[in-house]
Image (cartoon, rainbow, N blue to C red; front, side, top):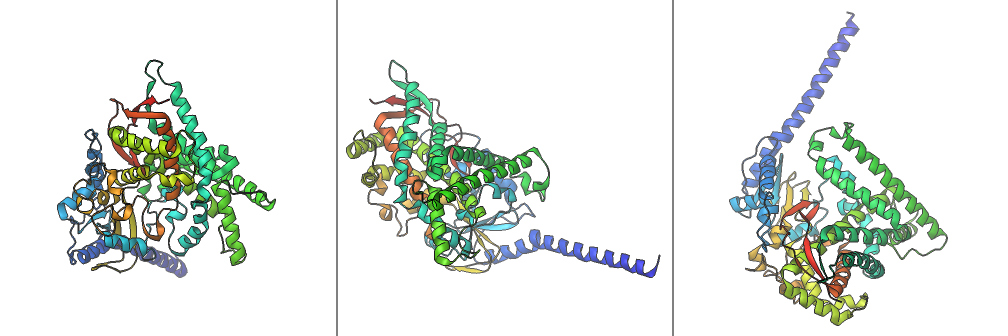
Length: 525
């Protein structure tokens, strides 16, 4: 072999060794040296946890404990949900106390339960950032303003927020009225002629209701296409959640499995439909047609206003891709949150008929048998108390996470960069030290003087929609829709739990009934 050839081989081998060695060192740091260093720094501050297990951390035990916890339904009328749906965090806190952490693979995750520290985390959104997706498959469903950080979140929030202010939510009244009437008319066809009752699993009914509402509210006259969009999003969510463990394997997303092909196909179809709707709405705006009757139209108006005010620069306003991602976000989030709020409300009002009677009495006093009007929704004090208590006991999202990229001071703690923070919302909502001895009971009366006086502590740990500047943009949408729908149902039906109902829960993005919610409906008129 010529000298030049020998030199080339030696150089190639040396490069492979260097590159390979560098990769091996990075992996060793990720799965061993960095976790051990972070563990030492956390323990030095009095924080406790089980010892780090190479690579997997607590994930194996977490998965096993969660499967065991949800294998059996809860006792009837029990609202002690945490040991079942939040089993491993509950186990860690019981074992190590409230100043504890756990291992999410090689990442230490600090469990934060102090309301003042949580308030600080929520408000310092530049310091404590949303976790970026460690599993790329989540990008198919978790996008938009709710998942961005820093300046990008500020930019998107400024443009998206006007679409969800209370004044614009007046569009919901006729939409919810029509959709809810259609649902209840179907219920009436199921009534027995003898006692005017029927048994209905209201969970799929309420999901269909909120699907139609978000389709009409978001896309206006394009609501039929909005329904197609929604169906794609629901299928994507199911595919993501059922395949997420496989996608923890590096490069699995590139394997041409049936599920991966379907995810990509759905994504292409979604983008094509939404882009077509956006282009038509932009043409309508240029023609001077109004866009105030749907969220997408208001969003595009807000975006155009921002571009005109800040200058037609490529970095100003939202691109077509940005708007599509926002549509994906509010299609999924706008459906999920309201559906679970309504289903748990009907379940709880079935368990506690005296609160159902009080709510109905208030609705009839405010609206009679007429269609609810937007301004009078503020007079529904008892209904609001009930919805707040449902959101406390059955929070739609049971925890949120934040990432610490560099060392941060938090109260008396110095949180090292590389640590994640877990805010266990459901656990906080059920904490007797914060809410009183009846924290695990359904008692809407605690909200009789409003949110600020509902808990035992000065800063009320009530986070169904998150907190701070990043509180969920769609919270007003969810509450207004729930008030209208619940009022219409209470006007026409009373309801009680069916003997077939099983009080079992699961978390599929949000906290949901595992086997539906079977109710006995009785026609009132």
